[in-house]
Length: 437
Image (cartoon, rainbow, N blue to C red):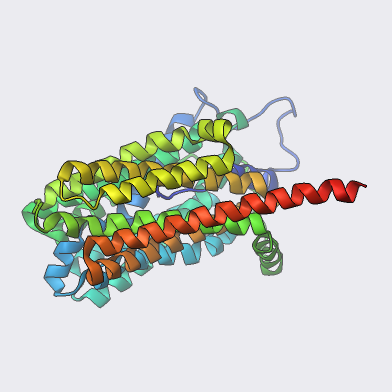
């Protein structure tokens, strides 16, 4: 997403590694001429806008039911925890399929896989409003999430292969911006539409918007010129994944990303129930607009690099965890102003922590960075799925305080892992001089 946005979010390192693996060995142009796209050059604007629209469609669809859960509960007569599966099924399926999709994109091409993924996802999106039961709705959302896994698996790889290195960060930034805009606007639009016409019309509206984005994406995205198909080699992929999972630092970063996303997913899945209840009793349109707070995350994620420069990676993670904790505690108040301030702090802390953890993955992995990043995305969306479900279960059992308690436990996990990492790093630094002697 973000990325997600929340979600989204394959790192630049992963994209660069994919480019290195996939670049043609014998370009037809002279070696001094880089035929890849650059700002102001042919196709660059079309490509940027196409991937921006793909990001909008992906995250608008992925989280289309999150702001509507109270209405879904009422329509089907189910609890918050049961309704939350309409979010958890989509993000969980994405987490499960992102690694296989990354392998398929190596064989069949980035544009082909992105086109097919969007086609399936928007088709399912048009069926979602007609779901006759909560079970059918959850099943459709799971299929949709699995299809959408092809976008983060392929978009940054396409950019790394088709865009010049100096322009790569900017190009990926536009795709991430699309993720953020899609995640935010999807929730805001559904909130206001649902207030007038119900949740089914709201998700149908998102489906139509996503269809328009998907068609424009396919028409605008330039054909790849630097993609070289690879073979599907499950053994090589499995060995790379096994090596990454044997790396303690990478595993800690995966866990940190999952825990931060558990807080974020739990809070934003349940916040609609919190604000529809007394003493707030807000209408659905206003609740949907709460997701404009995501803009704070865009700012905090962009400043994460400066935080790491000043505080180090672990210092930045401590600050992100402290900010998130402060937001969770503030949100317990029965004051709308304090609840909103709490959401601002939770969002800022989450996006900063996610940016630090995800960027550290590409820095840590010395090879197989695409798979390392895919594993991070899997952990990230597992955290989203778990947070949505467990946050709703906690809310059903103990109200908003239950959801906050779950979030505090997740942040405690982040801090504990970071402290353990600090001790491990110091122990390793003491061993090196000893080995030298």
